Image (cartoon, rainbow, N blue to C red; front, side, top):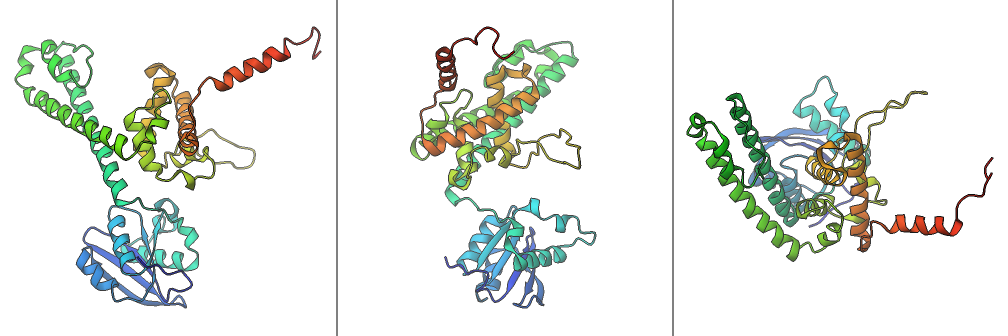
Length: 349
């Protein structure tokens, strides 16, 4: 795949991606518009349009189609910038927003300074497929939870309560506690629960194979209490490359686990976390933090803080490959305190 630098590109293209059509805005070296058009969102149409084109700088926004389209454009010899959508306020806050206008803004921002787009790096196809397995499993788990809550709610409205059971065995035990008149009506829901559980178990087996064959580094992360196979694999796949973070503590901000900031003058209000990162990994880390802090009784703010520390810790372990010793710091402090001894009487007064 052949890339060109911004200085070598004769033209700059802004490409606004859509499900059926993509709008493009082409600027020459002087910044003048030389083309406004659109092309079908198909492999054939895009290759026919951009294949004969001289090496150019093409900016597009991250989204559903960005992975395959960016690779197609790279194969055609162009340099591709995949813009971070959170940096494109100039597009979203435009009162005359349109697909054509979005394409032009992308082109002009890329031409003036590509750093303004904060380009993101796309995952390799293999990693994307493995992450698709994790996300598919997560979707099934969410669907199962909704069905279980539905069965509990309906049964409760008829004066019956279904005792606690594991999600994997709920479909077997629930009928015993359901009102007889509901069993036949909700049999379809119970059958769906059984099928979903079977599919989740299949995904679990696939993930275990991935861990042993392709991602042995997850064992380093699973040393930490509360970090299981799913969380470890999701962390590896979503972070992608630990070296791109200069400091481990910045991973928490990348995953949206740090509070927003709105400092003005002497006012520094406490705001909620930004939630700017990957929602799946953030939720998994919060779940791991709950396991450390005592389950549902843990304070929400404390749990988020623990999740943020977990992200930092996992990144550090991944980088260094160290054996995790959770009590090392505590032991060191106790040894220091023992050497110093208690404060002298009257000291500090």
